[in-house]
Length: 330
Length: 262
Image (cartoon, rainbow over all chains, first blue to last red; front, top):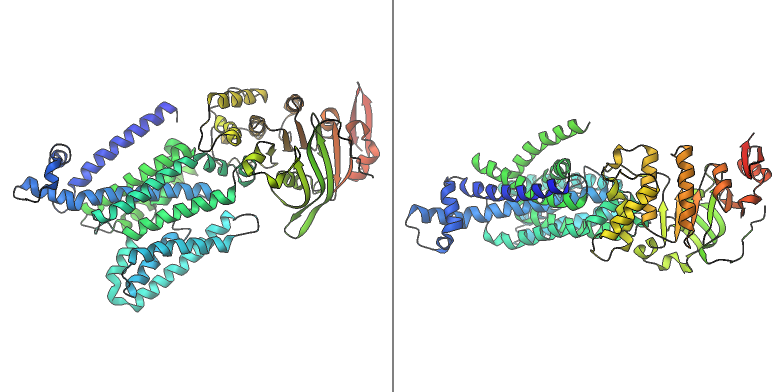
């Protein structure tokens, strides 16, 4: 992709994001006409902060302010976290299957939340976050060798640890059947409870995900192989450790808010590699904005179909897309 | 055969003393010592599995070792990775080309050690990368994807990356293994020109005649030991026969020498 085409891609994706946000704001149990959305967001922003909901326009504004806008922004931000993290995992581990799922981070976060729900601990989010991070440490320790970490061992350890954690989750679901509803939320992922309180955490995670761009050269170098990267000046153990930690931190943060949402981290980098190429300078931004867009549209579809869990839709849509990509690449 | 180590007539670029290299517990290279001076092109020759590539990896700080390796007088362990990358460029035997990067992007990565923290490539870096590409005969390939090139072209791109790194010392593991005779000779001439500017190179090679023609010195390795480290003019059929376990004949021809296994 030439520089000009990439610039066009950036501009187009920003425009599509804006349009998607407007569409997302209009879709739901109460359908708000796009005209009203545009008028509320761009012309009558002050009405958003009014507490007098007498006219239909003001009711729309209240729905937009307290339900749709936080949900829309959070869906986009979480998607951007998962997309950019997926690109980092795949670039660092030189493996097209690497993502928070295959490394066990998402399962660890979901188990942490499940444990907190099962034993009535109040800090569910903290448990989810710690679950994800501790799983990464465990998987790292299992795959560590004298000089560095073997990416293949890391992924194999992740897959095994992830299976064990999922079995533990099922055990908890069997032992605490009365809490199946709450468990279900964490396993399937959902933005149904999204509120403004989620925004600072998700915004922080998304900004950190965008900061991955600063290390695009290091990720390119890692793609040339460990030996080449090291002799070109990359401290590969340190870079791998820092980036894996940061990617897992923000993924765990995302999971701690909305539960496990699969396939976004896996599919998005593959999809956008076909458009912007393999250079991480472009791929990281494309995966960031593309992840946000895809999850936003998955959430729009989930709402349009009657508040389905968004995690189910991402797998139902992402699975066939992955199969098509696989078929095309072969 | 006794190991000869020449005196320090010119600045020493690489000084390795009693270096043993390990893969896990197993010692692959045993107590080798080698000194490469400024302006020298040294060829490392030996049968398969004699430890040539392993020794090069140890010099690039990519393998566990005992003994001391100094580059420009400084132990390689004392240098941060980026600083070491400003002194030593390394081209491995097996080049990983699974990611379809543009050729220019690959060569530009050679400039990474010279970039400041979070800095970007400047016009000068792009000029250097273009010059290096043209030196290895790959001008016009800037926009091509590395995965669409032949093995020999890939090898030349990575050599251009090493040249763009602008280090004092090149460690090249079989830099001409995928090249045809024309390009092999051209690349050896590029290396000869490169080392003239107070630089040096250590190349693992399998083409004895190329080594006899272009290398200033040759290190002959067998079973993890350097059996002879001397001027290429001093290499005779007996030492080649001993190292390769096959008889050799060397013939004087047009001012040079030709070596043939019998």
